[in-house]
Length: 352
Ligand code: 0PR
Image (cartoon, rainbow, N blue to C red):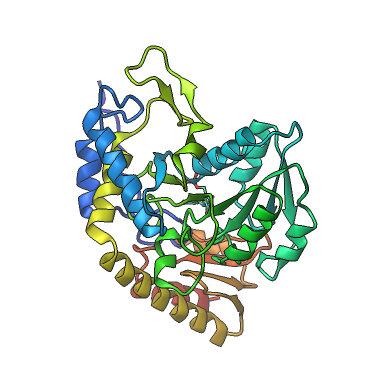
């Protein structure tokens, strides 16, 4: 019988569109070691359960929160869904709504649909939240007001303190989506975390800029009581209740997140952040000097209005780039993106 062809995973050499990256070597090793552990059953898999406490502690350090509550999710989508679920479960209204800027990630649409919550998206001020426009949408049935700290398309950061004030004014929770931005923001002047504003819950994903292996997202909450609103009884596990959305979960993601953060927080992340911003600025200048309109970089993500017949030709040359909803080229300067990669990308753009 013929041996089945084994595919190699693709390399990252020309990937400019992804918010995932090569895991840190120690994160890779940890993921492999913990591949068959299940933090969804902490009574049985005690070691990985302890590691998850470490992961939450470390995520709290990154996001400015002492004694954090939280857990390692399957990704930013689960963290955002669970944040909306906390807000809905805690509120008393029968007709809950969530107010978010139009830049919010599409996972909030999934959350709204799954949870029977109305999602109200507000028009923007440029590419970031317009708090006045959001204020027009909140009412007594608003359970959560969302700010984005590092938007998916442009890498922009919303005015989180003003968004938190708005949430408090209607007794709603304030959730910050820093899924991608959370490992860059500590090295900027932005006010985005629990220490800067009355933020209740926050998404921050080790499997993006945290350099952990997938799946490793993060949900943090200011108090355990917020997470308790998610608890479901688990009669046949040794633990008596579960707050997570998924049941069986990947211990690889948990262990990998801890290994990455122990290796990189804060010095390694700072160095990476500076390198990534330098690369993003270099690319922005290169595109600007060729006459393109460039947006950013606020965080290491560059969007530019390119009129080249972009995606198909660039794809043929092996580049993986993406477009914003408005059709701009979007390059995410993740850790695997080097200056020489960007130079050869720009050289290919010049070819047109
Ligand atoms: N919040 C923000 C701000 C995000 O950018 C993303 C993902 C999420 C939440 C959801 O996170 P998960 O995908 O972990 O559930 N943003 C990218 C996107 O949806 C994710 C991505 C990652 C896309 C790798 C491509 C890729 O190759 O576009």
